[in-house]
Figure 1 (cartoon, rainbow, N blue to C red):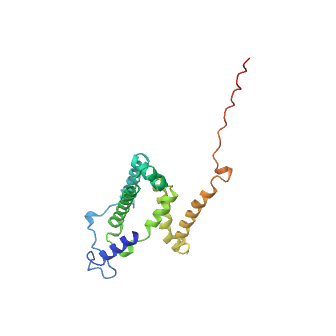
Figure 2: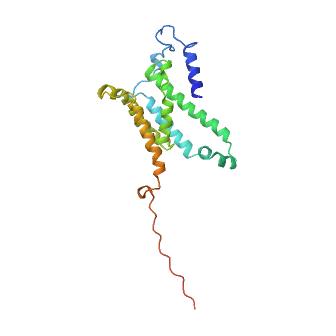
Figure 3: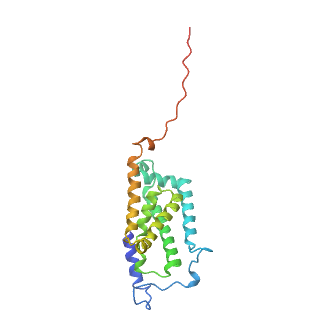
Length: 214
């Protein structure tokens, strides 16, 4: 579905939505300044950050505190068990994909309205695949995703600075992402094997001996 969406976007940008004045690369018409997102007062961060935090809070409440969220977590954890319980797995999958795609569309809107001001083929930068890593590291917790996304976003943004200041390859940021993924993935196999990863067992109170009867 990602490749289909990218192909449709490129077709529209190179066809009906193309700006004839752009001769270097195919791009859409620019967004008027009236409709662009501004920055937060006193910062260089646009209002898209607040949109993302708000969506994460709503997603947390939906997934953790509603019956729909419980059904979605059950279907995502074990499809066979969800079907045995009578849950509509297909319907839940379509709804979750629709909601996830809406979140991606909101992020793309903020990227265009606040940064690029127009759509072109270079807009596709693999952010969706980084989002998979964010969700995995955050253990699928929408609130934790806000912290992890800022961390990994900083790593991605540091690629150019590493190349300019330390004369390191620009792909160093991708290596850092891979290391984070491997550490988190390997930590699951270590959990429970060493004492430091095991949960302490609470001592049980001694039971009184049974009474002696004559």
